[in-house]
Length: 334
Image (cartoon, one colour):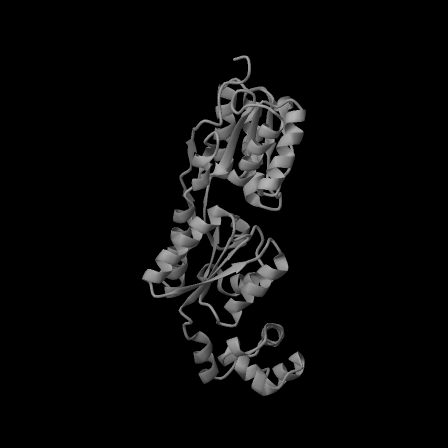
């Protein structure tokens, strides 16, 4: 059986540092803490009962990681998480990953070091440190995935039917008479983008318009929406479906820069339902997803998992809605 001396030698630290990582992880530098915890994991070290009790003590904090804090849809989600956590006496630590897997894993190590009691993550991948916790604890692991989802993750998830929502958006354009339709997906590493693109293709195929679909990729930002929309309009599309409202706002700017009218020349649909969309010119047609409810439901599931009252994996699908406003209208000539 491994001893604390074995762990110290493996991690190239003192036994006091090992003890500190297990009892007061917040006092140890992240790199050192990570190295010690990896040594504990690799050697199968079991600390004494006192250290184990310290490790099992509640931090009364949960971690929420998001790709970018500036995206309003994540702002709404954060409000939902904060409200539920605050009511339960928990504080929320917020981590911005900037879609960097390494940064995601750095934050996730806070669970292994007991700095937080649980994690809500929005990444389309499971960081290695979380994968280890899931492998050891299964459905009891205090980890919830929000917006993204996969049965392969082995954790509970809260999201909407992204494929069905995208199909609904494109069908709306087709019913308005649009035939050549442009789609602007976000980063394709995200399952939300892949699911939405699948829904777009299903709608176009069902109406015999598969060959009329045009695709230009963005990254969910306003700037990428402007660039992609400009290219798609040059390709003759009359309807644009953007996989985020921010990209749709960029698309509206592209329409104006081209000297065209919306929706008289080009119709634009966004995705998310952020509150700024209703104040665009014209007001933005969008797929609204209940971001705050996603956050609150994910937080409830996480806190119940931490308390041990929720041990089965849940896949919660919340409703979406097509909100029709002034940015969509009949195709030119219809």
